[in-house]
Image (cartoon, rainbow, N blue to C red; front, side, top):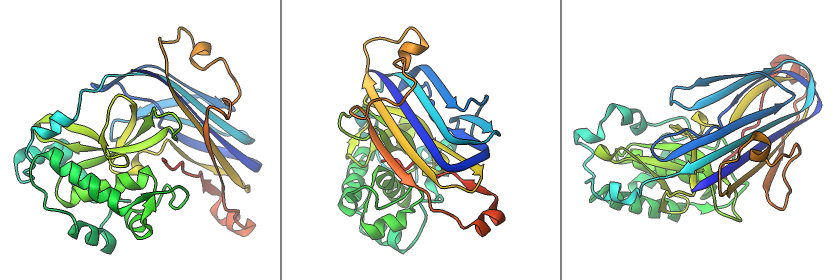
Length: 326
């Protein structure tokens, strides 16, 4: 499937801010599941971009804005061809035997242990105690964990945030795909099945296009993508962006800025199938310099909490709001 992804983030401020440092993770990697044919990042006000790869091999675009501004616009456009092999057979042909060497590969060891948002606690311990016995193929184990995760969380927006730990989501019993992914990862790690977090997009008309899912370790068959929110194996409608232990390793963008202002974040994302690769940049981005029509986009806005002037003088720099993956 050939997909075009457009992801725009607009940060607006009530007063001038400056000395901004931002990291952006919006570039789809090319691997055995997908091929990135085009990626462009536009920033307004203009800033030069430095590219590096983090410890999980995710591409990061880093930029600084030193001049004062009241609005920062980041627009990433990608063209990706997905060609993912079916994951079900890879999971079905491997027996789940966590003590065997193939489940202790160096690549997977770090994803067997707790992380910042997927950490031990009474809620997680109670959830793990309720899980059925982990036996059979990896596919059978994953399917039972799908059912357990979906029986404990109800999908609901605006009850959790980008930094909600798994224990709080369990107490609430509600959350978005980010919370489903964290709970599923915690369940996997609780039975010694390595699992990690995936940030990306999904082509599903009428739904929010940003998405989060998971990868589980299938021994000799390596990592396989699964979606606990929808209870299914990932297919060609999914575009992967970044991998990590949990959301804190893969935020689409994060940064700090200096100033005394309220911050509002607005995010618009569109994923659509196209017939061919665009021949130039203006065609790839629809030739538009303003946000795409609201009829085609799903948008979200949040208002930052205002700090008192005395607090601003003590802190100096403020952290940018995080985009929760819906």
